Each structure stands twice: as structure tokens, then as C-alpha cells.
Length: 285
Image (cartoon, rainbow, N blue to C red; front, top):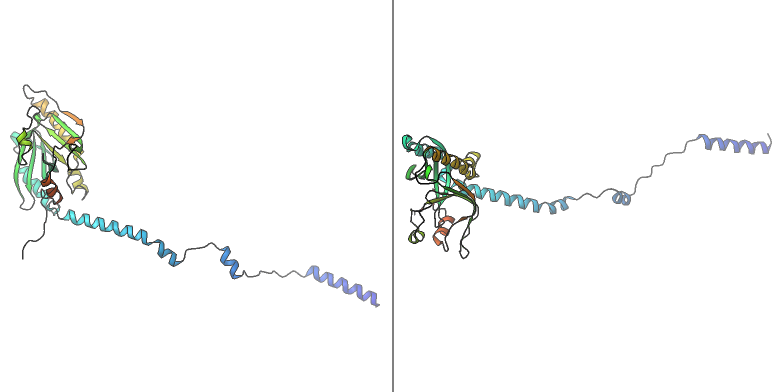
């Protein structure tokens, strides 16, 4: 074999090797700098700890607020097991079936007098009478009952509370005011007498324990109370009309005016819930 033949043979052999031999797959590892820059950044544990205190603080405040509200509600004797049902049965036993008729509904309300004082009341609607009962949930006895004939009720106002322009008092929420003698206006001495009971109307609002559970929510529902009282009064007017008096009940949605200007007694009494049967702690040595 000549030298030329050897050169051609060698060149052909090298080309075949380059064509048949597969190129090795090269997967270079990513450098640490590239992996850190390409991967999405995730917050570290320290960053997470920095972002969570605000949510934890709000949760703690919410739990603290709810626990304080529950503690305040537990102080009401009406929430003691069996107390409310015992009071309702006691008040129902005092109803005269021949005079008042059958009991249609029972309500737990807060009555507001003309000096803005709140008082805990059990209210009964019968066929002929509206009964407002002052019940002692501590001693479990009824102390006072006010009876109002349904056929004498002529007006029912419902709406938010309002006061005179120069008063120092404020009250939020809604109420219902029931009138039964529009010809009898309270005198000047009655307006300034905190113990006056000759007012021809009464005012109700929600009891503070209305949000304790569903049953109390129904017993304290003032809107449902207004509707049932209106229907009962209209039936009483048609059944037993009063001579010389217009029959029917006028229902108006308007602000309920409480004519008090200073009301220092009501401020102290309402803040301390003096009109409710409340656990006030031990007093002694």
C-alpha cells in the first residue's frame, strides 16, 4: 500500500467515526448563583414571623372582646339555667283567664321610663290585655304588674331614639312606644318627677341578653313584638270597641323622643345596669 492510499484510508476512517459516534449529552450543573436568581423567592421563616403578629393580635383582641362580653352576659340572673322559664311560668299563673284571656306570647324587654332609666321587664300579650311585669330573677317572684287593655291602645311608634337639642344624653338603638290615652297628656310635675307613673305611654327596647342564644333572640325581638301587639290590639278594638273613641291602631315609623336634659341618675343607673337583676359580687369583710 502506498503512502497516498494510507492517507486516504485514514481520512475516511476518521470521518466515519465522527458521523457514527453520538455526541455525549452535556448537562452542565447550574451554578449556585444561577439557581438562586432563577428560582422564585419564598419568604423565609423570619419573614413569616414578621408578617403574622398583626393577624395574631387581631385574633387575640377578638377573643378578648368576646370573652369580656360573655362574662358581662353571665352576670344577668335571667341567663341562669331554669330562671327564665321559672319566671315565665310564675307570670303566666297570675293571668286572669276570664278578664285577660289566654296568653298569646311572652317577651323579655327593657322598659325605658320618661327619665331614660332602663328596667328589666317580662311582657305578656293576652287576648285582651298587655301585661308589663317587674320580675325579680334573684328571688324568683313577681313584684309588680301593670295591665293595659288592648282596646285602649291607639298608637304605636317605632324607630330610633332621639333627645332634645340641648340635652347631655345619648342613646343608640331602636325602640317601640305604646300609647293608650292620647287625650291625657302628662303634667309639668309628672315630667320632672322621676317616680311618676301616670304617663299614658310606655317605651320598650332590646334586652342586653338578646344575642346570648337563639331562644333569647326570639324573646327579645322587638319588631316581632310590635307586629303581634298591633294585631292583638286591632282584634281587641273590633271585638270590644270603646264608646266615643276611634277604633283602630295607628302605627308610625318615626323617632322616639325622650325629654330629658341632664339625666345624671339615668347615666349612672344604665351604666351599672341598676334596673336589671345582676350579680354584683360579694360585699363583706
